[in-house]
Amino acid sequence: MSELHVMDHPLIRHKVAIMRDKNTGPKEFRELADEVATLMAYEVTRDLPLEDVEIETPITKAKFKMIAGKKMGIVPILRAGLGMLDGVLKLIPAARVGHIGLYRDPETLEAVEYYCKLPTDVEERDLLVVDPMLATGNTAMEAIKFIKERNPRSIKFMALVAAPEGIKKIQDAHPDIDIWTAALDEKLNDHAYIVPGLGDAGDRLYGTK
Ligand code: URA
Image (cartoon, rainbow, N blue to C red; front, side):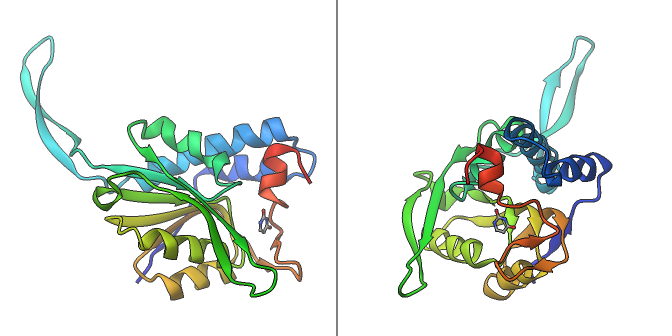
């Protein structure tokens, strides 16, 4: 069963609270998204396997733990997921980066993948799919479905703000996928915005509307 991890670190809570403020402009919003993504990456990577490595310090040789060559990939869902990419890469600089973009066909209402480029050796990689807002969960659910067709070793999903509806959608469709979110909000409104949320994350990141 998929596990849900809701961050309770004071720094994360503080920074997300500033992001929620409608008076926070795009520059500060982007910086905060970046910082929160970095802090979350620290938690998401907590289970990385370690191996013994011999290191010679100025005093002596000894064995120390280092990450056991795990191959990772980060996949932002376009466009708002890009706001979390650099923050994660700061902690996992060797990760490869994929991108996926979806739109909803206005007639069939089906999610259509318009862009998907994943690392060439995706079958050997553990992927972290990032998108700031897990609202209805439709986009994330479909993105994960398309990514699974490329057979990565594993997938984790990371959001900044999630609604219970979105969590349930992912957990029902992809029970093998663990979810990390900086905040778990109350609900969705009639326009599928998260309440209290922070508005449209893409618009807030890039100053568009
Ligand atoms: N997407 C957003 O950017 N914000 C929401 O509240 C819901 C979906």
